Amino acid sequence: MEVAIKSIPVLMQGAGITLFITIVSICFGLILGLSAGLARLSKNRILSFFATCYIDFFRGTPLLVQLVLIYFGIPDILRDIQEGLVAAFGIDPFFNNIPTLAAVLIALSLNSGAYIGEIFRAGVQSIEKGQIEAARSLGMTYRQAMRHVILPQAFKRMIPPLGNEFITLLKDTALVSVIGFGELFHRGDLIVSRTFEAFAVYMEVALIYLIMTLTFSRFVDYLERRLKYGD
Amino acid sequence: MIEIKNLYKCFNELEVLRDINCRIASREVVVVIGPSGSGKSTFLRCINMLEKPSSGDVSINGVSLTDPKTNINEMRQEVGMVFQQFNLFPHKTVMENITLAPVRVRSLGNKQAEEVGMELLEKVGLSDKAYAYPQKLSGGQQQRAAIARALAMRPEIMLFDECTSALDPEMVGDVLTVMKDLAREGMTMVVVTHEMGFAREVGDRVIFMDEGMIVGEGTPEQIFNNPSHERTQAFLSKIL
Ligand SMILES: Nc1ncnc2c1ncn2[C@@H]1O[C@H](COP(=O)(O)OP(=O)(O)O)[C@@H](O)[C@H]1O
Ligand SMILES: [Mg+2]
Image 1: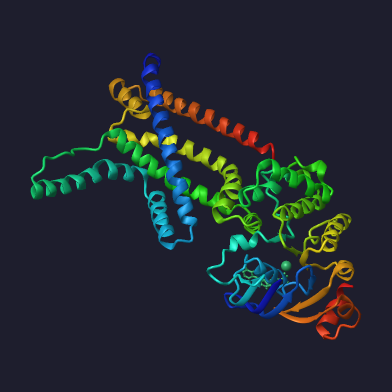
Image 2: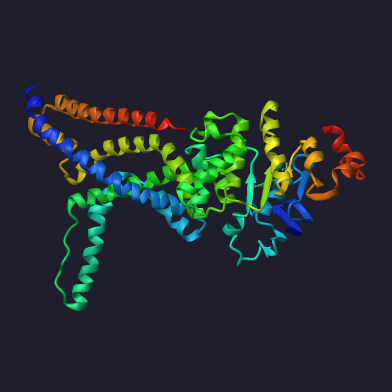
């Protein structure tokens, strides 16, 4: 019990980091997801093909594997390339490792971007065909119809699944402890290995995650209710 | 003027329109009737290129719509369409529904667009609903709002696809009244409908479609009083 109380400040800091990497990754994920979703919906076959590859890869492989691939795998290749460059042009080596934070954010952003891409596509496709037809029949271009008619409605429908994605990602950040990043779970892990108070500390960690996810899901519920008004 | 020449439309293997030829004069009101699945909607949707013809041509005022050089978005501004399911934009008020395209496509100022909108809402009897959301309106009111929305682009031609079929019977009259007013003002109209009263009253010409072809054509009197074609007779005896 004492250990649990003493570790509160350290774990809270960890929770702050967890929240930070979740929010930053979701923001990048939104940009990636919007682009990937639009690309998948596009009539351009090549664009749509690449978007599908991206989405399938990051949804179809474990986040843990993506993480180690980016943290250990990519630098490995880059170092090989660098060796070649150094040998060929006699330049100084300039690259050693990807910073842990960068690897974490890249992996989580790419992963959430893939899921958000699908959420986005599903949201757009859930809008009745008559909406785009009405917009186009008024002389609007595809872009205008998307921007003023389809997307505003799709966004509203995307809020619940986006909220879920945020919560899933927040929980999945625990995985980054494998590359030794000091977020909530990793800090709890370190405390346990020092104090052997596995139950108390892991339970505490779990409760902190729970508080964050519950708070956030309440907020999403509220948002959803607010947006119901006016249509 | 609309001119349709040797129009074919296939969906994969299914041939939905077969060799449609038809000219519709300016200010003419053409009523299209025919059994369900005969291709009436597809025919109408080829006139504003919501469906791309498989072969043949549709031209409006001499401009071919199947010509890749034609700007379809510009042509569509001249062709309003009213759908069976209204298709109002649910996230916008009635007024915003009406002003969206004039502001974005015709680059009309907001204030000017609202003035036009108000004028049109008065015309369709909905001036008190300008700032309501579509869900708050009855079906008949929604359809009249949709007509106002199409008219706000000041089109030369209006297409109506069974626009009273989804309405409760007591709402049909209000919508038909608006359409009759439009016809009397000289709007060029192509109207797919089962409302034979409307066809008789304001139709200049009735086209009977069956299995993707135009199989009967004439004035409402000719079609309704002495239909020459047996399928037309059979169809009319069922619905009249
Ligand atoms: N987008 C489409 N894809 C495939 N078949 C279609 C499509 N639209 C219409 N059809 C088919 O074309 C035929 C004619 O449809 P339609 O023009 O809607 O007839 P109507 O309006 O006279 O009832 C029907 O058999 C219908 O199933
Ligand atoms: Mg139809």
